[in-house]
Image 1 (cartoon, helix red, strand yellow):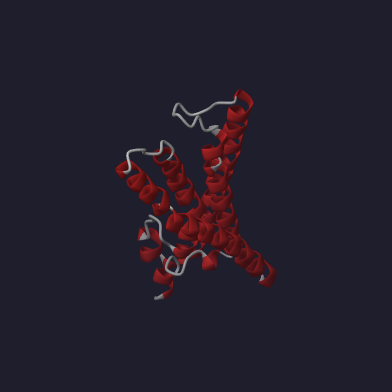
Image 2 (cartoon, helix red, strand yellow; image 1 turned 120 degrees about the horizontal axis):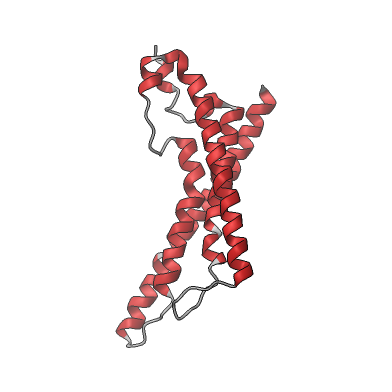
Length: 171
């Protein structure tokens, strides 16, 4: 049991570091927008800001998703664990299994899409003509993070989130 908890904590740490990377991206995100405002005022607006910041926001959301699952900052319904406290742990295990399943689907589908776009050399329609596999890497990254956190919840369902089992433990 102790090894499972350590493994779960290690997986959660990986997800937390990916969230920190997303936070750094979020902090840096206003810089290109400020650059665009300044250059627009100078009469030479850059063409790359809107597209790249849009891709960055998508990547930011996916990279931070595992941390949101761990801390409980996501949509969930606690009706069953609140009414039936004995179901809290089995429902936490089910939640972890569903997170892992969704993460794997997103990971595999994302890798497939990235591979297809790589092989076809698909590019955006903008002036930058960004290879589409680059922004689409957000999907397998998000799948990896969600899957890792789902696996952590399966290994240690009691630590699924600070509040998820707290309702059931009050009684």
